Amino acid sequence: MCRMTVYKGLGLDQSILLADLIVKPKHSIIHQSYDCHERFHNTGLPSQLNADGFGIGWYAEKLYSAKTRDELLFSPKRRVSDSFDGVVIPRNKEYETPCVFTSISPAWNNRNLVQLADKVSSPLFFAHVRAASIGSLTSETNCHPFTFDKYLFMHNGYNIHPSVHPPSSLFLHVHLRRGVSDFHKIKRKLIDRLSDVAYKMIRGSTDSEHWCTHDDLSSFALFLTHLEELGPLDQEFSGKDMRHALGTTIRTLNYLCQ
Image (tube, rainbow, N blue to C red; front, top):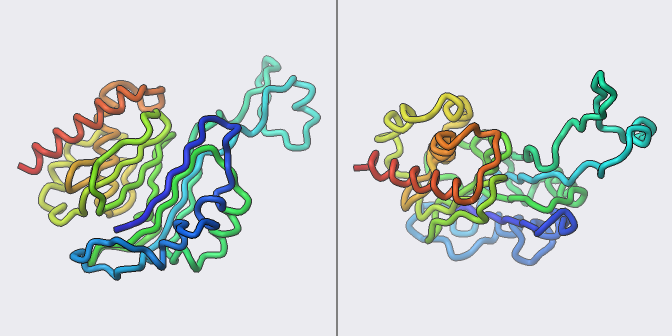
């Protein structure tokens, strides 16, 4: 199974360096990319390797605190644009969209990952090392985490309990019980149910970008479709809204798999 790590502080004052969690610990995600344990033995995958790419996704800290117009105009690190009425408009809202860095190289052998993790701090980030299923495509577009607007998504293809953690409108974290074996049998029916926005979001060919959670399979796109039924995806959704969309996704998958 793949391996993943999630960090979520309680606020901006609880940002940590990515390296403090994904590089330095004895059981860091990078360490688990070449020396993982407790993998199910019937997967057909090497017992200790997650070498088919990696990805990290994080929400940037607030670029600057509220300042006066004059302070911003004379700031050498100015990140604003001026409107015609003299109001200074931030280019990016806090936590508006996540940053993502992926590669098909093994995590243990990527210098850019280590250097980036040692310089970037965030109050909310994901890390994932991939063990691709036999015969599946290995490309950067298939490396977790996936992103759409303010949402960040990743899964573990061989976990025990499905869960969503935490109930935030900013991101979704889904665990899967086991991997996809007959995805091709329902792929067409599932795609026909996707909204235009969710369908356009799909870039790779891995099952992860078509599914969302229950015992066997996962779909980010299907979840977004059901979430969009509650309102435009650029609005803020409550945890209750997200749980509702996730429940609808599960019911849809059960129906398609009958």
